[in-house]
Amino acid sequence: MKIIVLLGAPGSGKGTQAKRLATTSGVVHFSTGDALRASIQEGTVVGKRAQVFMEKGELVPDSIMIELVTQTLAGVGGETKLLLDGFPRTLPQAIALDHNLETKVDQAIYFKMEKEELVKRLTGRRICEQCAEPFHIVFVPPRVEGRCDRCRGGLVQRTDDTESVVRQRLSVFATQNDSLLNYYNGSNRLIELDASLSIEVIHHQLLETI
Ligand code: AMP
Picture 1 (cartoon, rainbow, N blue to C red):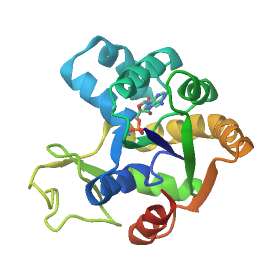
Picture 2 (picture 1 turned 120 degrees about the vertical axis):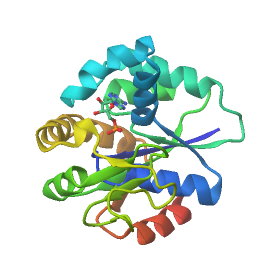
Picture 3 (picture 1 turned 90 degrees about the vertical axis):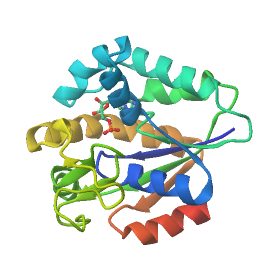
Picture 4 (picture 1 turned 180 degrees about the vertical axis):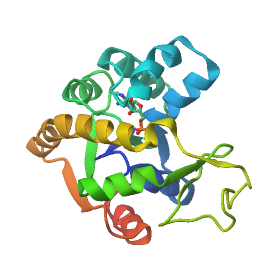
């Protein structure tokens, strides 16, 4: 298994790019945020514990996250190229990821973006409630207002994409990010990209990188 981690603030486009790469180039995309939201919908124990933190824009404790990711990745086949989106978010998570599995992280790709640009992106984001396709009221508007272009499902705002929760999520990100960048940079695994470029340009940069 080849593991590539996507680092960057919420709203920097990691999920959009990972979903696209998964459909065009056969890599496997695993998003811890999506996995937690699915657990909440299913009413699992992990979901119930995580929900309290997520609604406040705080991080779910490392112990829960490390167990969730270790269990999920233990079942992934040897030939898989895996894009991890939203994990690791703390240094203990990064260290556990390198030590708990047979494979270490191969590359870390950092999606770099200014804070106020992130606020604009996140608060305008809308997600299809049926297929999870992301849109943006200004930057990626749907053809029909409030409806998904792909499946016609209704578009909703995530409860943690309101401005006050967004600002909390971004400040949590800022406290953890430097230690993660140093960790991967120190082992020559860090690649940085300008996340304010277009979806198309970044997609091609990623195709060349991974
Ligand atoms: P995301 O969809 O990646 O923005 O994640 C949504 C929320 O899920 C975050 O604000 C956290 O509360 C939680 N979460 C997702 N991944 C992690 C992680 N690796 N560590 C801690 N909390 C996480």
